[in-house]
Image (cartoon, rainbow, N blue to C red; front, side):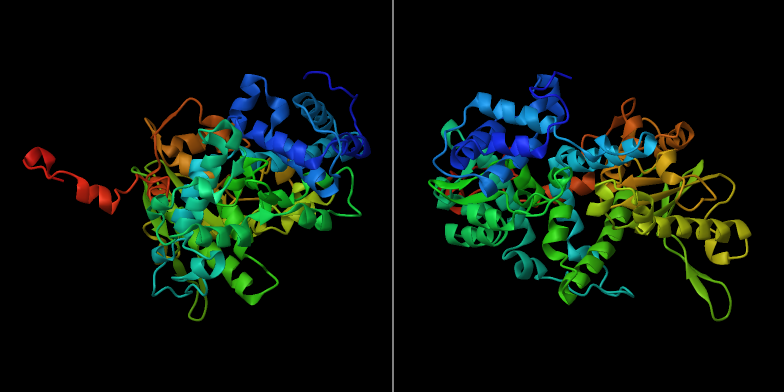
Length: 514
């Protein structure tokens, strides 16, 4: 790693002083213009641009907008380079903790959970949101019906259809990163977009309607950021905590529309995680119901992904009769391959902030997640299968290897390593924790069976499936994700305008028939 301008560790006060030396309007406009032209994170390091990662740029923008003063000297590219160099060297609790593996486990938790979301594939994330949150995929006659994610829920929560909400995200991101006028990149203004093109939306028909959604969900101001900046924050951990520009990535109150300091943050609004936090206010009954419905739809979504497997038969949850008065449900899915039975339990869970910060109570926090319950449910289903006493399970073979899988909505980094598994319940078969993003790619494997990949992962003690993907080939597209993508305005193929169709000359002949 290139030597930083100041030796590690740099105190947050020094970093703040360097950021606040500049006018926030100048610095954040420089950040926006710089960030707009950069490739995805995975390509930054290959191009020698590792200093300009989006989480660093967004933190600089947050500090500058919330704490900076107008009329200070303007910032140059060299100034931004020096500031980011200081960010890279910021102090961390690892410098204060006792020697040993525990200190590094906490550090890895902070770093991977802080940086990981920025490196997920945007196409998959937006497509997943569309495919997952479609209430029509949930059966009307289910024993546990949806309560709030019903037809029209998106208009109530978002102010427009989910498709149009994702379309707004795609439009803002596209303008901020690829506007033909280079001076407009890193910005967005409604009057740059022709009103005639609003027919690409499903329901939005005017700039005023789009502005209402932007104001409700996307836009913040310097005053709001200043008022919300934490007064008594931990200087070693603040940068790992939630950045409000993740929730509201557009800055209003500037000339010429909205400033978009880090366009990649706009995409985060359209991910399942972004939508989960938009609707999942657990302080309200509606918010609690939303998170419960989200979990039900997530289970159905995982089932749709498993259905893409061509060499396996999928058996959904089975109700087993234990006695005249007692019944018990199995895990969510049995995936039966010719050489393997995969027991899948779905948990719509994500690591909370305290777990992501990697504190000393990491083990207790992990035990408090639904993952522990998932392990116990897999153990219970293994016992039911091996007992041979339950005719309801007759279609699930017991003559082959068994592996368990807990599928989570977001990654729990490092969770499959021995250091983090030691305090979770022991399992009667090998069990891996897998994020849905890994599963979406895994089910498209070609040239071999997913069962062989799973066995290799377990035998190698791989911390995640992705580590073993490189030697294998996969389909170019996941069919479920492709279906979701095709429903998003400005992502799906452009629909012809009525006036264009009317003006077209009629053609005849079989070669022109649709």
